[in-house]
Amino acid sequence: MFSIELAIIAFIFGVGFLYKGSDVLVEGTSKTAAHLGVSSLIISVIVVAFGTSAPEFAISVGAAFQSRADISVGNIIGSCIANLLLVIGISAVIRPLKIQRGIVKREMPILAIITAIFLLFSYVGLLDVYHYIGGILFLVFFIIFLFYFIKCAQNERKQNFDISTKGKPIKNILYIVFGTLGVVSGAWLLIESALAFAQFFGISEIIIALSMVAVGTSLPELVVSAVASYKKESDIAVGNVLGSNVFNILLILGISALLVPLNTIKSIDHVIVLTIITFIMFPIVFSGEKISRIEGVFLLAVYSIFIWYLFFF
Image (cartoon, rainbow, N blue to C red; front, side, top):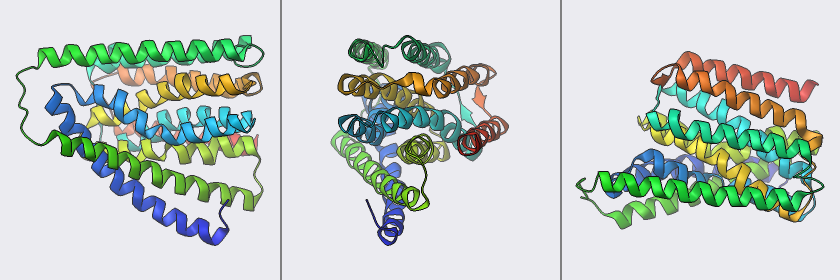
């Protein structure tokens, strides 16, 4: 744990790593997608989401190893909520996000189903008493999810086999790798500084996990999506968030559940909130061809209410 002095320094460096890393990551992703003949959406859902979910993986799985289930679960729930409300909200305010048909017909329904399964598993004890069963099922669903999107990428490449392949693919891949490392390193520094601030002010673990740690682990998604929105790469901005939530629930909670009973029934009200928010996204996504600035402001307002509820109720 950092001292307050080190926490301030870590915060400054974390912001720098996040900004530069996200800029490089978005550029590498969009160029790699063009080179492969697949959409930025597919690359974002599979590759970028995996990279930006690394902080959630480190925090939640690490907490599970230490039998600190509250932090493990609270981080994932809070991060998923922050992704949908804070990340998409800020991205839409920066620039209205164009919605690809694939998001309406494929990504959003998949996320809604997975979130509903998370709620069901929490209610019936598959992440508590029967946590091994729940963890295995989550990982099986995750493998199915990966194979499905890899198949989608293969189909898109076949349809776009004549796409221009100019450029240096190795350079673009290195951009993705080093951009992800920069984003993850920056997030780690910010998370550690946030924990130091939280401990200094005496905030409980579950509240820290749902708010400060969750926002900290969502910073890669926030910065990547915000930069992508500014660069008019809406597919990356939205695909990164939807893919990250799937990774958070299926992969990270799946592994965590194999290590320790997560006792999600204690946090069932927060899981319900996450489920409601996920389904609130449906009319926003289906209402037109873009998420407008007004809708972005609405999402940010809802997130502000959620944070207020955490600290005052």
